[in-house]
Image (tube, helix red, strand yellow):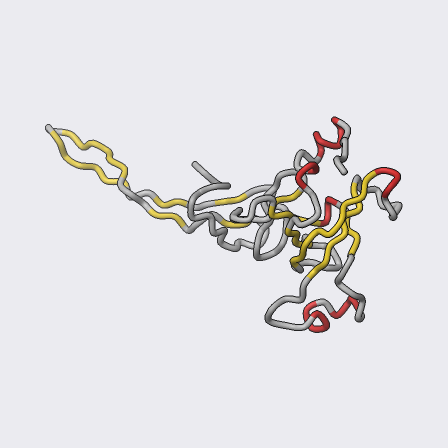
Length: 171
């Protein structure tokens, strides 16, 4: 079923049309399921929605336990609640719209930090330039060398963002 979103909905969340069954998802910071990854199994819109949440979509996700620990230890606040067929809104998830994408992306287009699970409003990078002044023809001429960088980092947690091909954070 193809969903026909309004212009207002697409302006707020331009990636809505890409959210389909089979899309990989991750729960964002602040969600009860924060950091859990899973797969979208179903998407409901309009009168088909089962919840009365003030979201555009009901997105059903089958989350997976983290590979290094049980759900009881990573998310004790769930008190044994299942992690299958969880209904989330578009504002609670990041998505892998392309298998090889370096980051999950929110429905409004922001990259998700892989360390703290926030939709990043800002990414920072501190650069240090090697500057030299070479004496040429009776005067000093400034030249910029290679320099170095501390890497692109999440503005919230300072985690380094691995984007080796500069697909997301290009100069």
